[in-house]
Amino acid sequence: MATDFQNLADGIDAATSIMSVQVLEDGSCGEVRVVAGNKGYIDSIEHPQGDYSMRTNKFVPNSLYTDYVPRDLNFEDFCFRSAVQKKCLHSYVKPSQMPIWFNMTFLPVGPSEGNIHYYSYSMEVNFEANTKQMSNLSQEIASAVLETCIKLRGATNFEKAMQDVIVDIRELCKAEHCCVLLVDNYEKKCSVLCEAFADNIKLSPSGNHNKDDFYEIAATWEDLVGASNCIIAKDDKDMEIVKENNPIWYESLRNANVRNVIIFPLKSRDELLGYIWAVNYDAEKAPKIKETLELTTFIVGSEIGNYMLLDRLKELSSKDMLTGVLNRNEMNNYVDALSNDEKGPVQSVGVIFADLNGLKTVNDDFGHNAGDNLLKNAAKAMTEVFPKGCVYRAGGDEFTVIMTGITEDELKAKVEELRRVSSKYDKVVFAIGECVEPDYRNTRTALKIADQRMYEDKRLYYENHPELKKRL
Image 1 (cartoon, rainbow, N blue to C red):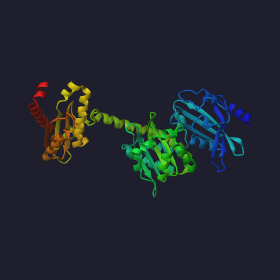
Image 2: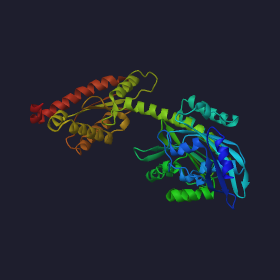
Image 3: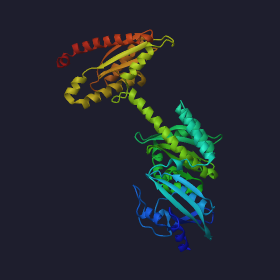
Image 4: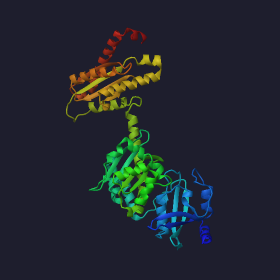
């Protein structure tokens, strides 16, 4: 029989192996072995191309497939459905941790030998995504993916559009809970972008996903996905494999009344952004869910990447990167908006100019790093007293505060508080000028008066510190 299988493999031009699947007494998938392989398949093991390699570079007939690659529940599911359920299957996937795409075909082969069943596995390796293969979907799945594209591309509110998408994904999975979990590996934290719940469920609150310790769990998923492109645990047997590989996460799932779970990485330009996950889903729908989400997550990952990039660009254009407060450009835009607003109700505007005394001396004596640290501490003092969205770095050592709806007494109290707070920081001393105008459309007038008062405060400071004035 082995010779017949070898001849069968050799008769196929594509890299092909004949695989066997063992059916256990409970009807589930047992051992999956590589019975025979043609030259193309053997070369993929012994002489791999590109930046990927197998666990061993020696092909041995009838070996366990896990001798060559890490265990993959999704691959085993395809093996079982092809060999045992006699289905002709196709999949086009990119393993999460490999820089290649696999174009795979699974065809049942007979006859079976007791509880051992056979199928042929043909594959083509692509180092760039083949869009024709990716879009080779059934009409139902293509329609679902297209609907996701339309919702995201036509959205004026990205977060609302993502909420609509996750509701659709939960319905597709018939899951009790679906969410998009963003993972920030720099800050080492997770955040929920959107989520959807079924009615009358008994899951723990999703707020747990925002806790600092949940990042430690999410950080393990990439290794658990491994050579596959997702995690699909359908039943208790699959969940036992999760337990074997990640006992802490398994316990957290059980404690949250989770029976099964699907997790797909979300990537943009090969950078991991987070995950889509669904729990307590309809396991019978697993093949359809996998095929739909393989392309959906490719699109969603790209859209989230673009959204985060635009958000980052906006942050870069509006923030002072050294101190973290808003920059002068953002201040000018806000002043223009206030000055030209003809529709809003009239209310007061309070302005503070706070110029850092002694920055030049610190730079001269201790270097620019010390000067930068002084500016950072000055910004910290400012944001302890004022909301961060009101504080601007207007120039090198000059900070501005603009607040609407504030009285003179309230603003003066804030100035005194700023002087007290700044004394906590070494060498942070401000020259301060403030002004309140009853109509915020006169913000420029308030700025001019506050600036003049700040210079008067600075003059008095150096009169009281002649040694610093001499150095300047």
